[in-house]
Image: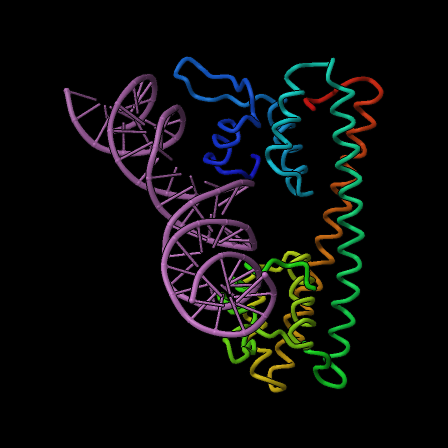
Length: 113
Length: 113
DNA sequence: CTACCTCTTAGAGCAAACTCTAAGTCAAGC
DNA sequence: GCTTGACTTAGAGTTTGCTCTAAGAGGTAG
């Protein structure tokens, strides 16, 4: 459902991204709807290059409940600004790569490329 | 000059990103202007998440000279489209993170965040 | 002349994020 | 009752991209 392997889900639990995952009588894991939504959010943070240990910090605040909302918002706002930065950097690099392609196409390879 | 450590420069040479780096009589490396420009381009490809083994493929085409320009252009065009994809993905994720922040701010934490 | 500094090498170590192995438990199907 | 298959665990192995160590060479300063 999450497109993550069972290995990865257990790993995320081991390192503290997933906390308090329920078990049935046999000790098998049961992921709740809430868990699935949280996992999707983990994937989003990862996809925007937040390291797992920072996601873990967020996860720990999360289980401590409503009193940590302010800090979590601060974390997300800071992260969002880093994402904006990433996009700006990518844009610059993309532009330069496009220029290099044009240079290559006409005039052959100049300046060491 | 490149903001890369001496370790990293030697590593890049070891894995074949930098080829034919000149040496002086003592065996010490001398980086040419062309090398520096190439290193800047390596940094750009890396910053846009091209893996080092793909940069190495490019590097090998590069030393083979003008006859490989077409293939290099194809590589860069393919890469540029992946960069476009990355930017689009980042944009989507950023939007969703911003929504989550708003949800958090008013109404507390809904849906498992 | 000796100490020091910066380079050289091969190869070891490290951090992040998985990915897998081995040994074991347990319920269900034949 | 036995096999199969999906789960469990601790811990080992893998990949990527560095980062460092150890041993050694050679030029420079005092």
